[in-house]
Amino acid sequence: MTSMDKGVVSTEKAEDLDDIHAAIGEVAALLLKAGKPLEPAGLSTLLKQHAEQTADALLQKDYDDAARFVAEKTRL
Image (cartoon, rainbow, N blue to C red; front, side, top):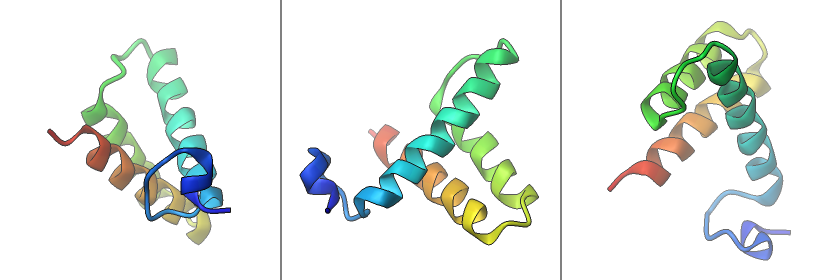
């Protein structure tokens, strides 16, 4: 299944989008729990921090992909 099958125009595969959405959701929950605003810059920063701090290569890729996804989707 491609991302087009999910109604999303992207070069990412559908399973990659699931991982990206999960990473964004995890970071969004952390920001909200800390009482911080849910803004693209904050999401990207925290996603990049998580990517740098994890030793798990797959998680690092997910966080990096998610940070890039947020940046692409919020660019005007």
